[in-house]
Length: 327
Image (cartoon, rainbow, N blue to C red):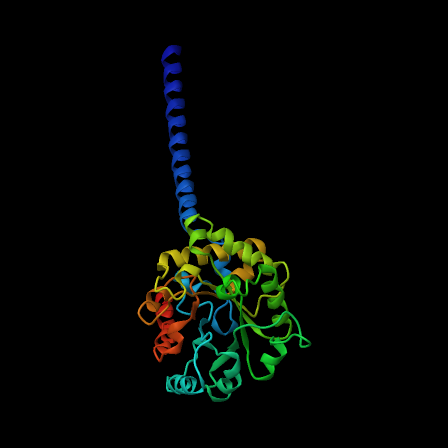
């Protein structure tokens, strides 16, 4: 074989080797790109958060809501905010209808009665439903005419308090600031109450694309004062949907819930983000709750007008759809 022929064969061999290397590199690059794309399509607080979700009963394990197990990670929570509604007669009838429902164990239920009827509600409402105040003062008792402190709520058997509701944030007669709500939250937690912390945007803020900015600002004020989030439940309530009959689509609600959880993971801790329940509120009723409950980051509801009706028990039962999704 001539030297020219040998050189030609060596050149051909090298070209074939380089071609194989290029094909192999392209395949690996494609796999990496596909993996990266899949991760972007399903943003989470961190890649390993699913392994840190707390399973019902306090056991650890992968996230059931992502299909890993049939046990839900965060215990479903349904709160009823009765607001400034009712009298002794109507509340007695409402309590009677709620007491007729089947016992519950896989869902935590809390009823927020008006202040004058809190004690009566706690004495007469079924014991597997907790009771919440709808507001409390920034500190303990004293010369604060018209206010109610966390210690008083605890004294009559309340386990929870609703703070930061949009009506207290935005009614012109009240106008509570983020900082005041944060101070109330810290004090209530320090006194042993659980806090249902409400956040959410106005219609003009959503239309301006400021939904997440508003929710993050409201959360940041509380995060600046609160270090232990074990007894905090977040309630995302878009203000434009409260009492209007307009409901955020399940996809809209899930998007915000996921973003709030991601913010918590980055600014508080991944563990807190995965353990904290995030409720949806805003014209929730017996007709729309089941579909909303299927979303992985909707951990329950804070219900307004529909909590004053016997149908509230159907909303409580929507937790079964959350479990069915996980199964």
